[in-house]
Length: 449
Image (cartoon, rainbow, N blue to C red; front, side, top):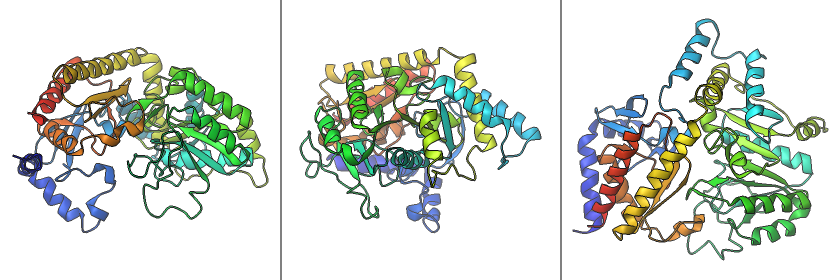
């Protein structure tokens, strides 16, 4: 039997298990593009529709239960419906509204806690999403430096905007040489001129420093994820230190996009873990405790300058600092600092065990797969070659990846598809990790029988 026949058989099993979800998708196609709110949530043969979630378990509308390692695509650091967030929001809503639209003491409670946690933060700009935070940070950098260009690294993802959607995934015939990768658009509809104002840097390569120097006259900011999205690989601390030196010498701001890594790798995110403080830090996802949030953190001197230009950079947003979001974020920071300060050691230990056991199993059995990750983040790659930079994924076996994803879903494990990172939460027990390891080993073995 061919692999495609196997894959079709697995899809049919999912169809049989989730008929109500299949019917809902057909209904959704009438009013939603492709029947989807977000394309990353679309699975083959169709996504399951959730009915309930609690802790680490999700139940779909057909009654199937899943052990969740998607965790809201990184949002749910403490699992579904954690007690500290539920209590904070319920107490707030007993006497206060969902949204004020005027200043409240919550803003001070939030910002004072935040700046104690994050090395680069003297002041913060609060918005609603990570994508919005990227837009605001780029405006800040351009205003502060008087320059126009934005640099990003190959494989980095910074939201659905014209600064991000270039060379997120390496395409073998288009990606160009490793030391000077080609700028390849990832979607249609990017603004005219966006390519001319975007500089692409080779991930973790010394040649990036020369490219920054070559563009220094009009380069406003270099953006990077300390642990980058597609591939779940990270920069070396020594490389980040050199990058900071080069940026400072060239008058270019350094921006760490910590929308995924912030408050997940540590209270201070990747900048704390790697010991390198950027000029600007971007935060979102798990910081909101389940509510939408975006934060731009920087030095007071930078904010002072951009707010006193003529015209100034604006700090506008109807829902910025929404009361429920701030309550959620405050509750999360209190949990991480006061209630459970050892959380990061536990998350890292679980992640290290997962990666170690999976990789040892694959190597011992000659199976072409390996797992990358850092702390509570992990990702499986269907290749026997080490994945050290994003373009190392260019030769993965996509059919094997598809079969693997179907098999683990049929075994009751929910992970993101489309080459996305998976996540461990504080709600996952040692037994949950053991079950995940069992399913991953079983599914991998079945893929190559």
